[in-house]
Length: 180
Image (tube, rainbow, N blue to C red):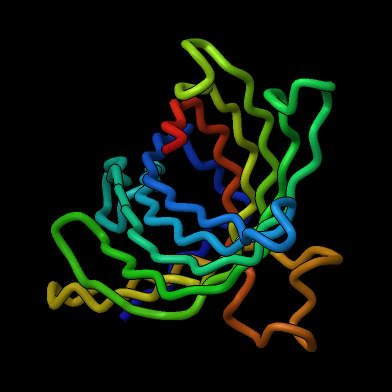
């Protein structure tokens, strides 16, 4: 049995996709609820455990659903350019490609800027999202137990979110909004 640790291993840039539904309240049109379905993936290369230290590429993907409280402010008199934000929590399914999967809780904070691109019904949107999710530990049944862990920060202090809730992602998403 051998144990290999690779602290501060850089993670390669990944990709993210999402779909959001937002319902603004009639009484207070600056407040609403949203549901986000997100998918994101990243990869890393670690030194192999064999005698030749053959590099091994690992890829993980996550799919999550986040109900959120949402607020917005208009940045123009015509009420077409908006700055909005959302705070939510949800469930994330984490998968190691060719290995295990785990389900756990996650948290999301997002800020968005949207502006019209066609007849007041189609808007462009740029979104920055901060995701905090659980560590990923995998027993891939090949005599290896892989443990992926984020690092603590002021936001993910272990006493606040627990000892395994410190993996962070920061996707930037570009998209279109259809207002009906």
